[in-house]
Image (cartoon, rainbow over all chains, first blue to last red; front, top):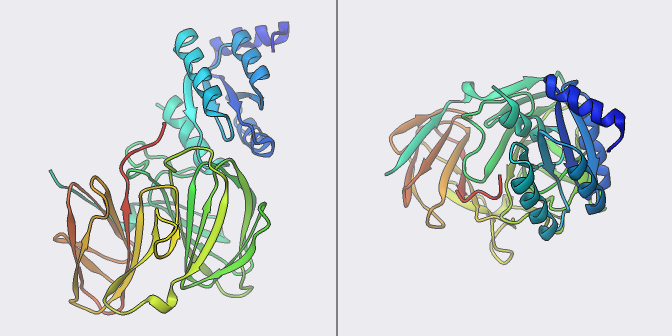
Length: 115
Length: 242
């Protein structure tokens, strides 16, 4: 998360077309599926989180192009994440993910990153 | 002011994967059209033709109301809630994916294609408890009548979902006319011609064409061919978090 390698990557990502994406989902198997799908696209660099502690850690130490809010996140935690993004990193897009797998995921990302 | 849009079948997205020929009424998978993402809470309408014995392996769903209507053949379903079933023509299946489920869907018939409509609606609430249901409407179908097959109410006829939507199916003789009343103020209509042809609010629709209508309290439907079948979706236009 906050390693030198990650910090170097953050700088690299800013200079390239690579999109840093944080996927938050409390259904571990769906989270694994989303990560696997995103890794198939070379331009997407996903980090994944299935609990509030690692989410806080990722958010405080990285700058993401988009945060995908997947299933099972308690509403109060979802609201906290929304507030944090709004107050600290307004250029980060929040994507409310619906559907589960690849059917809508690329559409959701395309609506943010597409031309 | 009323808003009526015709959606010709040949302008849909789609893909031919050999075992699956699919048409997408809205952006889905590799088909992305920013001006055609959804109609209110109706997000997916896929018209799938699945070769014998083939199907969709285990895959996830979450936070969607997923409705499957077989048009021909039979579809075998297994899910992570322990449900295992076959749905056939004359039945409707619903899954509220909520916090997340995995399932597989295969053509139950080894040598005959199965055709299904798969329809996804945004739920009015995220992270509901997942649930599954299927219902046989075949005995209720009568010529020249719309049969309600889905609603938001568990006590009502048909399956129910976590959204203010009502679905009706009907088969009509040539020149038969019917009026559909909007079920909830503010809802829109997405009508999809399964077979035959219709005239709806003055527009001519052929097989697999659709029409979307908002700001009307009732719509006028006239069959222009014998054995014409239609699916009327009465859809909430209030979107959830996007």
